[in-house]
Image (cartoon, rainbow, N blue to C red; front, side, top):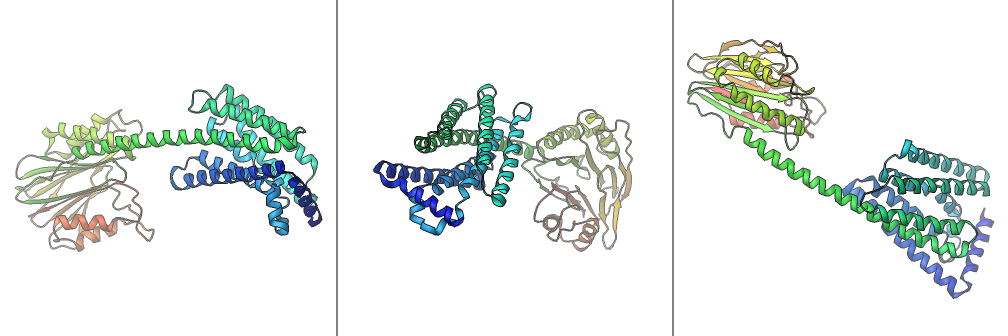
Length: 467
């Protein structure tokens, strides 16, 4: 192998015996440098910002081609003397691998192709590269593998041109990409069919045109995607502002009741909701609801719930009737989603709390001077999917110093730093240990306690304390 490498170097050095040959090799070095720079920039942009696969495949394609031009350049060979003996076979290996990122780029650009032919071509290139490299390692690189590679590339190029000219239309940069491929493939054919001298320079020039066209197309798509993302972010920001108007601006101000609320959405908009129906200075109903799913669909349903809750004002003293009314409103409108809800009516004159739930985590009541937590688990079915669902009320005493906690399942199911869920038991212990701390501090401390390294759900709570 060393003798072959040395002989190859002498053959390369013979190319430098004329000024024209020297200029050609210098041009190739500059082109290879340009390919490396384009490849590095494309991969860096993919890594740091866009994550568009087009940039990744383009970067690998350009980098591999540039590396092959470097390793086959007579000036590079002369400058490195015997130090590149270990890379003697690298250009052949690269030649087998170069088509793979190109095919993947095309597949990403125009789709899988008619009857998945682009995908088939990609797997054929991967399989052939593995087989040809294995043959070269164990038996030496043979001329028949080079011919087979050329045949596969020509067949794939015909397939590529077919897709480009018949199925890749109307997209930004489509015309430029089509003709850049035609020019590059034409130069490749010139080099592979007996015109090695002129083809050795023409092919990299054609590749430069191709990389420029592909880079232009990839940049157009990245810009287009960024514009769409910006538009979506602006729409989400608008949706979040609208949703913030849906939530009560403040809790009811009542002489015998202190109320605090906290709402921490997982995304820009969320499916959690809380609301109040205040009858007078002594009676108020609190509703907390959780729409299945996240994001815009859940937020739209939450907006519907806001309207539905307002329409139930005549049932404000009857939580079960409120839930039944909401269920009737949502029937047939959720398209596979559902809503859980907790509804509590507090009567400060009667010192009672009336509760009803719809598939929701149980409300918790902390008694003044008692270490025990009372669970209110009067639950009917989810709102929406079950038109015949029935909801019932549970009434318990609610005296001065007692606390009521309504919350969504994002709090007990929150994953903490150790990987364990916050849990129902921890929530009860928290209520006992923070009883008497004040509702505002209670709410802040609970959100902090239930906040893990990654928020996996919306966090919503309403804490009410009788005075």
